[in-house]
Image 1 (cartoon, rainbow over the protein chains, first blue to last red):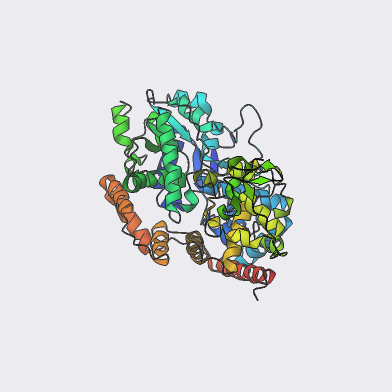
Image 2 (image 1 turned 120 degrees about the horizontal axis):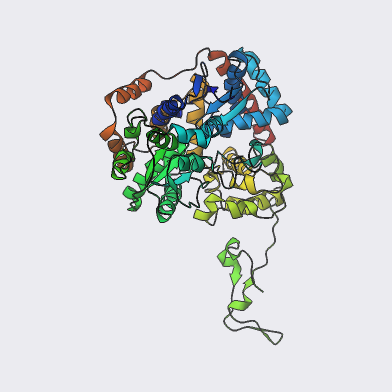
Length: 307
Length: 243
């Protein structure tokens, strides 16, 4: 059996809040494709972009607790996190625990006091929702299961920062044909192309949306987001496909803010890649949470006669 | 001779003469711009060690000054004064007074890690930026930045309950930074979402705001984390001679 057929699932805090639609669409797409998710029991926050600034090793501990539950209590081999922040932090914890004795010592100390088994590096493979679908199903099988098509939809694929940077925490990337690239990521492009979308040549795939300072330095974030939105429009995109709740809500929020504060209006819409795949797989937009997005995806999909 | 990185020299230290001959040589005009010589006596010889004692700053000594960090920097593209390569240089030679000229923008690093990706010496410039911003706050050169206040609010919630609730973070952050919550663009954003939001989801979000999400059996982890963080912060203060 495919090792991604049934994986431990770590949704993370954002997917229970602003990224609710990403959570429901990920589950719906998994169901339509026959992939199973086993939610990590009693998971905690990974620390996102914030806890590391108070203490990086506490952040390592937070991820290690989630991995400890998945690997040692649930006996899972693979954990899947759809959020770039969670995915990145689990990967970073894995790297630090494998390479840094001080991190191991701190994690062991806190784990013992917290009363659970210390996570041992190498016990678990962390993957992103993109890996899960790309390697668990693949484009050919995905095409066979399509009930509709994204034909006529021009998509800019936006991966953000934490899916590819820094390179050293992603040892499986940049391994040549079939592997993901950290400079020109393409897994989302591949999946959406298989679902019939037309991917535009988008130069800002891994640009930063300023997510870490989306509220604490909104002016910088608005400039960065506006740049991404305008580049997507210049490339001819109708929609920006996202694979991170922080990027997604950052793009939506600062699209509104750019309009209100800078008077710069942009028309491009934002949809999670799982929402786009779900539509092509014949799942109802309501189940995919399309109406929960601030950006109006429904009218675009109707206009393009996809719905 | 051309002056490289002219933006790094204070304008008052640049002199151009309309009409000047030195030993019979014409040195008038733009092409003979002079940099005023100066003597620096206030080196802080422990600056690099202090930054290296804070999390993220550990590898600053590896820097070769190639400039890949500044070249790839997201914030530099928006604000040319944001220059990690230059700050690392100032820290390494101990020019604290020069570093302090940029004290109010160093916290603006967005942690995109483009610098870390590009750095050929594994300096981890993103970490150095965080360490420097913390150093400025710990030494009292700057008040806590909005970013630090956000990080603290977020971390307090994680340590207390093991999880965060976004609405609570936003409300508490705006309160901590004395900003009104009802900003035009946030209200507009809420309106656009509410237009299509199903009643059930609205109710769920309201419940999450009242009954905070929690990880179960978290209290021992919470105590162990707090104990560890307090120890680390005490060590850092000692390294910065703030005892």
